[in-house]
Length: 176
Ligand SMILES: CC(C)(COP(=O)(O)OP(=O)(O)OC[C@H]1O[C@@H](n2cnc3c(N)ncnc32)[C@H](O)[C@@H]1OP(=O)(O)O)[C@@H](O)C(=O)NCCC(=O)NCCS
Image 1 (cartoon, rainbow, N blue to C red):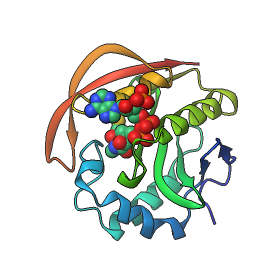
Image 2 (image 1 turned 30 degrees about the vertical axis):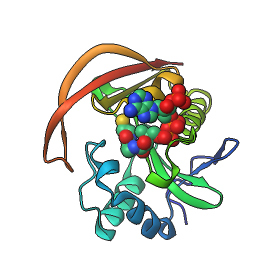
Image 3 (image 1 turned 180 degrees about the horizontal axis):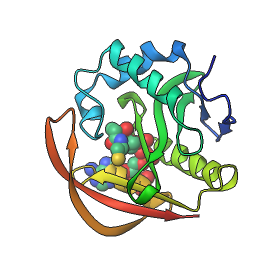
């Protein structure tokens, strides 16, 4: 049973974006238990345990579908990462995502973000999406630029649970 029953599957050439299922959690926990993955996110701890994956699932299922959507990124019938939309600053939608390290460098994050934005614009009727990336994460900046985001010029500190401290993030915006 997926907890994103209201969201359709979104298909791209190499990916399926779908609701999270309990059966995804062991593999997601394995992929997320990597400091180089979680240090680029605000909310993921390190080490990342099975209990953290359970907590992620509960949170994903509890979100109001008006302003939350959490997708597992499935590639060749297996989960490889997560993409989510959550309420961000100014009551705007914010996108976040991560992929397991074996899947980096193949254009998959860009493909996922573009597909998710297509869904957000078409089915979800969102007009504006915010994103931020740590300043020491240029790869994510590239993903966002290739997906149509622009830098707002705002840079501010943001806590990273895995780092145990704040680091500067660069804010970006996408208009439908
Ligand atoms: C960031 C992340 C999502 C990128 O995933 P990916 O599938 O490798 O991304 P893509 O292949 O679609 O695109 C990466 C782009 O960054 C570029 N890039 C990679 N390392 C780079 C670096 N050090 N400096 C500048 N650009 C870099 C790549 O060349 C590519 O751009 P190109 O296609 O124009 O050549 C992935 O590394 C990840 O999950 N990291 C950990 C979690 C994270 O950072 N999440 C995002 C939080 S904002």
